[in-house]
Figure 1 (tube, rainbow, N blue to C red):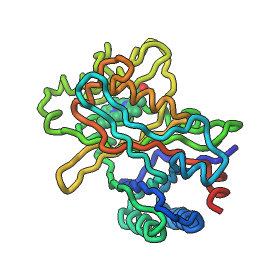
Figure 2: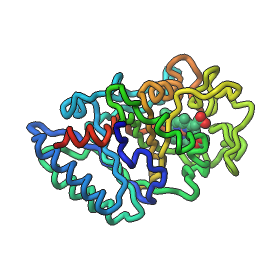
Figure 3: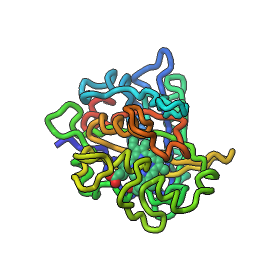
Length: 306
Ligand code: HEM
């Protein structure tokens, strides 16, 4: 069986996360890029840093023929209700996601990689995130309750053997900006209706309010958010919060899936692009950036970077 990158399946994330998105510069030397990424893999393995390498559609197809089906670049998701709400597309070619208990070691590993890539790839953006309490979003709501059990991650998030891209995983990576002050003005009962779960212990509301987040993302065989039918097309989330010096705060949304369509379907639903009402969460938070990547199997990465 093709081997998933270990960090994709590791639910024991370190406290400190670092996301670095890069794209090639004109005249980039693929040999330099390959050896810089290989060195980063080695440095992270030596230090016990969890590293996920995600490749955008253009870099993946330049590095390997092992390209999964239906791998599309991220296009802006735009609401059609006149609100102007959107999830901006900022597709890049390469994602490093590092996490560890040691922020210093994470910094050093990604810094060395960036130095090695200078002149060949530019850093488009980077975000440092952290784990807040018991995996809370900064709104105070627990994030991850509805995730599949960890032992089901392979079934949910890894392309099965026999398919192109086997052992790999589709990634969505977005930096959401919260209007936390506006959200905090809502009484707790209203906040709970935004997400569809209680704040104190993440109990699922029943019935689910139709504008709630769960009514848009909890895909079911029947109506979305109707828990009388089984779940379908699950994803495995690893989101963590961030806080910038200028006061900007939010959630770095990171999730894995064995195909890309369920990620797009949820985004379209959240922005009401198929005639649904918009996810109420988008009245309080919207992403400043968003990309799709593919995390190839260890074997495909080894071959592609050799
Ligand atoms: C500001 C951004 C977001 C915040 C603060 C947020 C927060 C939450 C919270 C509090 C829950 C309920 C607890 C849980 O199951 O984790 C939840 C559930 C969920 N969210 Fe989000 N979320 C965000 C964006 C997204 C996006 C962009 C997607 C998908 C593209 C998504 C997919 C899901 C899924 C699949 C569930 C679980 C549904 C189930 O139980 O089956 N979320 N989210």
